Image (tube, rainbow, N blue to C red; front, top):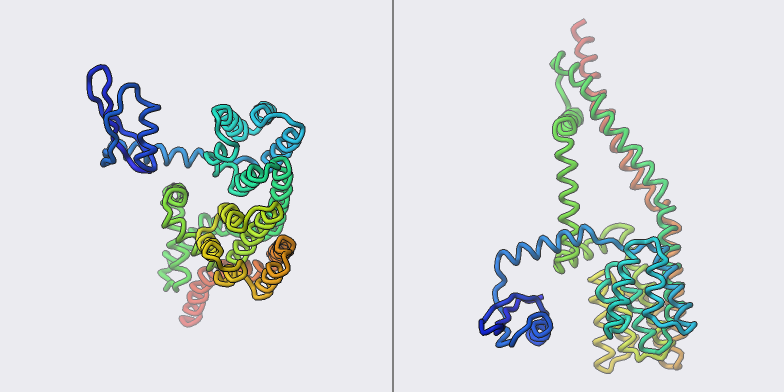
Length: 415
């Protein structure tokens, strides 16, 4: 958003007001709606320091307070909206009814505001754009599909099914992570107790006997010093870093892109993100193609719901290839994300006129790949978990017993 200064003639006096807008045309429109009087001119200006600080404070607090709608509540509300739309009830009335019936405060606030926007003449999808964080990209993409095809109720039913599928995968992922997570939490608690209460006892013994301390012991003593003297400060620092990190992710495009790019290089995580993204992308794309939406428009809508920025950028190149007259299979091949088998399937679909069927098969394939990764997650994490546990145990054992062995050898030597 850019900063503009509007010069307004009101009651015979010129006054200047600051406002934010995407461009001058939008700034003129906002100025006419917001200020009474004659708009003399609207010019782009330098944002005052006070306004910058106020905006940063507002953005910071809004990002902390932001909450996504609970998945179960969102799925139930989408199903209700689909049923009520199919029954001929207006979107405005349906949204108000759902908002009044729900116990989810975020859903209540979002749906009430969307209903008010619709009452002001906005479409459902444009009203939802203001709540992309709360609703998710997939919800907005499928609502746009329903508006384009004129079958909003069918799109909402399909959306509910997709959200249920995603929810099932999340539940499966959490179940797969439950055992390793609990083991690591137990180990972390045990390690903290040993560092805080056991190591200080040995520290006193080592100091009394003036024993030579090896590196593992020095590491343990250093950790004990930090834990017992700066524990609250360390926790406070970690919390601040977490909040700042979240703020940077939500407000800095370059930082978010770099973080997403880093995740695509991390063991296991890269495959989860890649196949989850391709599964959702092909699923939405197949629904759009089946509904008769042109390929270029279908790509636009499907790409819009991709969260990972590097993957999104690669998929956008497919849109440019198709726009220039190239084939879909060529565009997909150039991204380097799709296997040769997938490219061949898409090529066959384009040649035979059964592209919607082939893309549906591709979506099923990527869903199968993603499910396989989630099913094998526990086994894949076990080596990492065992390595971390072994490292902690080894550090404790060497840190405590090495000096004791040295003292024992020294005592035997004197005898």
